[in-house]
Amino acid sequence: MKRTVLIAALVLGTAASAQEDDPGGILNPQDTGFGRVMRNVDEGVLDMTTCATGYYITKSGRHELARRLFEACANAGYTGAMTWMSQLDNNGLGAEYDPDSAANWDKQAADAGDPVGKFNYGLDLMRGHGVTKNETLGRQYVDQAATEGLQIAKRLQGAGYDLDEVTPDADNWKYAPLF
Image (cartoon, rainbow, N blue to C red; front, side):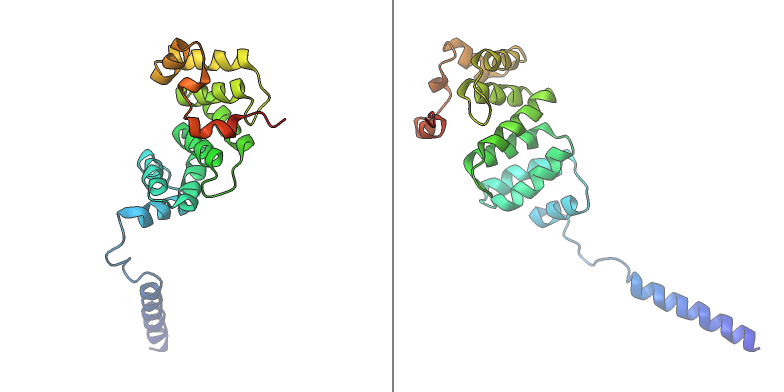
């Protein structure tokens, strides 16, 4: 009899403990919005939809949050996130302005075969922005992007590689020689 009572107590205690550990899940979990996206990032769920949401996050002015998302996605191999990390670094959004880091992200995207990464890294090389200036190699990257169908690369080619064709006047200070 004591044995039966002891087993019953253990079973009931285990069931009560299991209920405390798992109360049946989360009622009304957030399954949409930026909160859900960032939970995906925290949980290592990095799919195209999650990574693409970074665009809306940064456009809403939440650059630190976008940076966290894009960096995780870039490190997972999403080239679009690499080019966004470059854009954030190149404009000091969510962190300090860092042309070296921006060029590094562009190179990673280019090396992974992304036409936008190739175009951007080509511009970096042609300007000497974040990397040692090498106009010949820069044009090769732009030409690869154009061959792959990137219209802005074709536009730059058509303008004789005149960088003013693809650069707003407001950014000229950024690309001016430092000495």
